[in-house]
Length: 197
Image 1 (cartoon, rainbow, N blue to C red):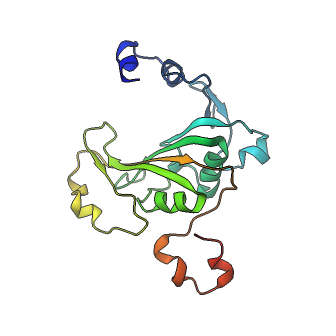
Image 2 (image 1 turned 180 degrees about the vertical axis):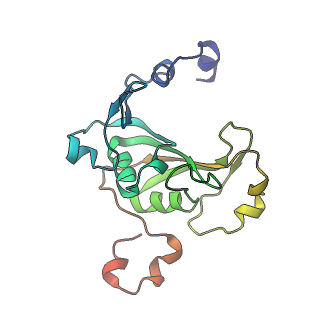
C-alpha cells in the first residue's frame, strides 16, 4: 500500500483519497451535504431515526465526536456502522483544545470501550494533529495520572489528540463501558455490577 500512496496524485477530496487507496464505497455523515456528505444527526440513533443500516469496513471519527452532545449515541452509531472484522479509528482532542468542542477524551476510555464491547484495541497514541510528535500508549484499563508530566504535554507545540484503532470482533449490541477505576468491587449493587466487564 505504501508504494501505491507514493505514486498517486494528491486527491482533491477525502472521498477521492479513500477510493484511491482501494475502498469501493465512501460515505461521510455530517449535519449538511457539503464535501460529499449525507445529512444525518449523530445525536440520533441512525438506524431507528433514519433507517440507515449500512455497514462499513472502516468507520472514522476524525474530530467529529467532540462536537456531538450525545456521546452514547456517537459511539453506538460507530459500533453499528462498523461490520464484523471492520475497524473504527477515533482521532479526537485529548489535552488542551480549550473550547474546541463539547468534550476532550481520555486514554482509559478506549481500553474500557474495547473490553466492554469485545473489540480488539490495535493501537492507542497521543500526537499532534500535524504528526510532528506521536507517542504510543500502552492501552491499559487503569487511569495513568503521569501522562501529563511523562510526555510534558504543556510544552507541545500543538494540543495533543488521542488516536485509537479498534476492530469489531462480533455482531453484538453496543454496551456502555464503566470506567475501570470504578468497576468490579467498587460497585456494591450486583444488578449494576452485572452490566460491566
